Length: 265
Image (cartoon, rainbow, N blue to C red):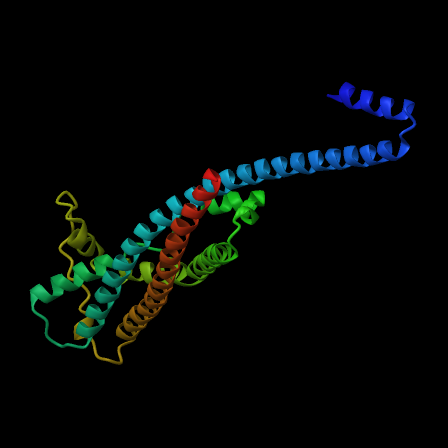
């Protein structure tokens, strides 16, 4: 093809047809420019296609993570509601002067629920990989990207508050109180059902028989109140996270449909 155009140029020059040669040269330049533009367009199309494939891969990873976190949050919220009910039940019976043995046993069962740490530990691997590699910008939908960033930033905030607040309180104040003032083995057996766990014939500390001004009763009430406050905050934070992850889940599905359609085109 190149030899063909060269022969045409040489013939026009030998025949002294300079005007036609000039027109031909301009036409040839235009053809070259068009060819370059077509090549660039093909290259851009290919790069966009590769970017869409990569975006789809990460969106799928985030969607899987969102599904897992939704299930975890639903379970955590139910556990936290159980804990709040247990603390409420104990506080409600704290000032009642006479309790039958069945109610006392139920208090042990309720208290047993409060000994389990159930905090907001969710999956973050897909997001962390995208954040550390700078691939968050591969998410072309600004609203989706902002929603994802907001969710994981709020999760970091919740984890930080839990560590410095409820977790620290549980480890340093709440949990150490019971082995000192309660028949702890009886409490463990009430929810663990460990038939092989023997207990001494120790009477439980009768908090309900103490006066309202008794220091031990005041301390127990304050511990329960602080535990309730921390659990209430965690519950509401988990509910907010659940709403966020449900929104992200829906947005991810919609955007995956768009990305997959773009890859086909």
